[in-house]
Image (cartoon, rainbow, N blue to C red; front, side, top):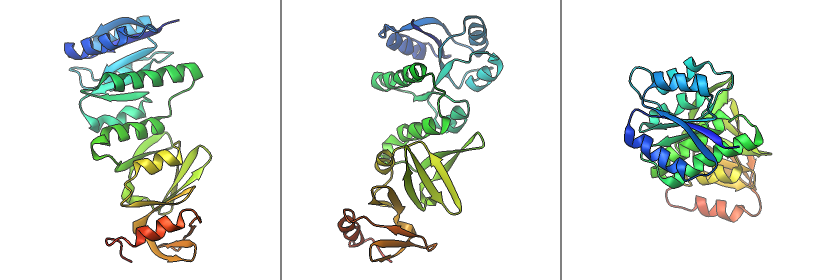
Length: 253
């Protein structure tokens, strides 16, 4: 059975680009396209698409308002499409599967489509915080390293700036992010987290521990003592790397 897709964007070149990419995929059936929220609302209510490529900024009714008014018993998966990254938080409060920033490449488009297919195959509901974290990596790709991470609590998503992080530890398929008296659980691998953080500010000291170097007070034996008194173990394998890091000229205690 093909995946039934709807394209919603007030700009024809954007609709044409999405249509072209979708037509290259034999698993997709395009059931319609619309240049306004009002028309799209009618299509969603009558045809119940599996997937909607939805522009956020449209006249009269934006993408968020459209989803709120759709009232669908079987809401479609949504990939937001926009030129503005400031909508990221709100986009993922609606449990979007992904978020395409214009102009996007075919490779990026196919990656978003792959996510949709994976969710449908697993019959899973997108994890908003997890998707927001992935999108942040995409948005901040020009900076190479992320500056914020998405955290979810009480069904709300907020962003935690990286400089607010004290240390991070692994917990099965999750990581626990410690910030002051708060601990946030994020569905992210330790390796992925380590690659996303700026190595000038974050140091992996153990297979399951990453620390914000600005929080370190001293190194005592095989432990790092943080400003709040926490003692974090340094693994034998990581110890030479940790010592080398502290020998850099810009590191002061």
